[in-house]
Length: 250
Image (tube, rainbow, N blue to C red; front, side):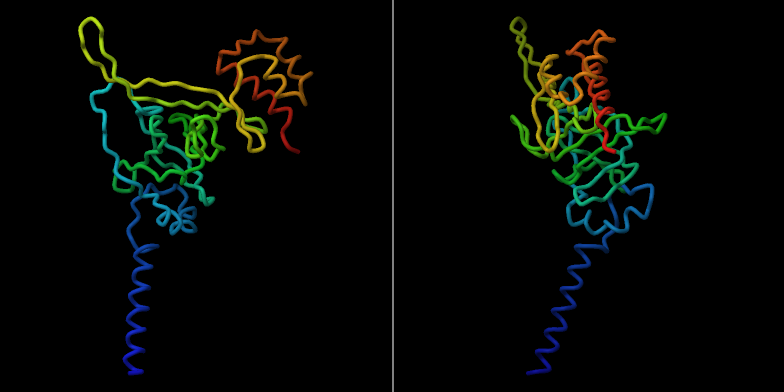
């Protein structure tokens, strides 16, 4: 009986080790691999157990006008994962209807990453290779958004300027012809993020200056040399960039 018990234990341990290997490390990689192989080695098991593989992507709205994506074209991007891993040169595109990141895996298939897995997406310019767009997740819930929503970073630093864009699939009926159109419409809001607090931005000079009170004199002097349009995302980005240049940590 004792020998039988030992054999049973050995069989159980062998099966357990086999299952663990199957779950954590011996399957072929089917995610986009980084340019630097060393980045993959340390975090390979983390990625597999957090479902980097994602689910297959299927087009649900083939006849709709417009697109649910930030850009229909795939971009090369560097990714920061929730456990600290960094992956480079991954082909991605961002779905702004479901706020999900799509990736091209090693088999050339488009998949959807698990919500919350990717914390930062740095999309690179295809010509220069420099940072073109940055998106982040993990912001505190605000309004109708949870922590899994993607925000575009328009200005980075101590006081971040964020743009939230949401695309919606709508149906419109022509009152004259009765023709029905299916299309994607987008809405957007700006937010600021500082010290873990996210707040909707008011496009108002006095309000913005109140956010920059520690450098208000410098900011007001900077504004006097410019004709500011607070409805312009580009001009607001420039203003926040200037403020953040004044408060960079030592």
